[in-house]
Image (cartoon, rainbow, N blue to C red; front, side, top):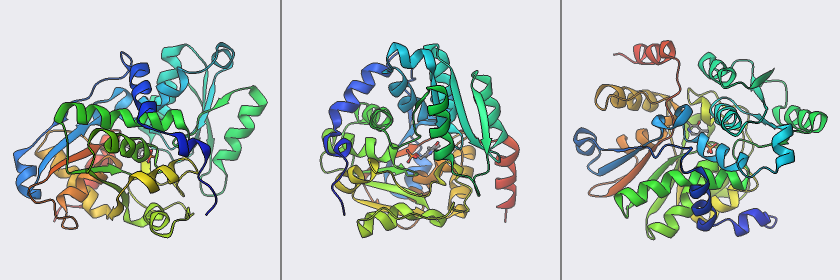
Amino acid sequence: MSQPSPVAQTFSFDDVVQAHARIAGAAHRTPVLTSSTADRLSGAQLFFKAENFQRMGAFKFRGAYNALSQFTPEQRRRGVVTFSSGNHAQGIALSAQLLGMPAVIVMPADAPAIKVAATRGYGAEVVFYDRYTEDREAIGQRLAEARGLTLIPPYDHPHVMAGQGTAAKELFEEVGALDTLLVPLGGGGLLSGCSVVARAMSPGCRVIGVEPEAGNDGQRSFRSGQIVHIDTPATIADGAQTQHLGQHTFPVIQRAVDDILTVSDAELVEAMKFLASRMKIVVEPTGCLAAALAFGPQLDLGGQRVGVLLSGGNVDLARFAALIQAAQP
Ligand SMILES: *Cc1c(COP(=O)(O)O)cnc(C)c1O
């Protein structure tokens, strides 16, 4: 493989510490939840970091705000553009609104209605594209050049990675050292940031990324040492339908993550049901990736202290109901 990107080589816990200072006061410090039923089910002591309670409903606000708050006055005046299937879009839109700058969001035409409405609700301009035939990155680049906007991608950017890592920093600050940390994985912004934090704050903690089974490009990349590209995977985890890891996120994941495992859509729905019925919280399918692994049979977590990142809660209630209904025996 070619040399890791310079960004990946220098990216460190210190970047996350600085990001945390930047987002303090803007981002919520989300609660850490526990459940004795979940502990019994897994045989472990589980600590759920509830980013479904983050502003705009997912951890993505952390990275977006950290990135936008570092714009120069000229960049602020012109604004930001991004491409996203949803939560990053809302994170950018809300951050732009809070920091008083224009935002343009390139979104797939079939993005969940709740995410489109929320993005517009934060005052952003939405430009649609067909995710099966068009290249969103190229559209984003074109808009950036044509209008002088600064492009902030959903995961492959050091300021985004650092911001996402603050979720794990808060978790370790609250509960202390852990034996295992389970983190949902799409393009790897969250996992790269959180893994660097785990290495610094809880040496010896095993860090595992969790992907949807249908889109296991991250696992294949991790095991082969090369970034694997796949077609848009068919999974209910719409926040993890990424086609490849990033040039910056991948090398960090290679050096700071222990393994990448997958869960099925059926396991995601089971986890979603459990979190709603037992813990009284709404977590979107992608947000259930880490929990589904903790509840399932793949890992022996017996007696361990385990961090479980619940990454977001943005799901149409009708879709939420339909997924649960379809899974009833
Ligand atoms: C974006 C997202 C992920 C995946 O994060 P990456 O940084 O792309 O790996 C996981 N869960 C939710 C809810 C998300 O919005």
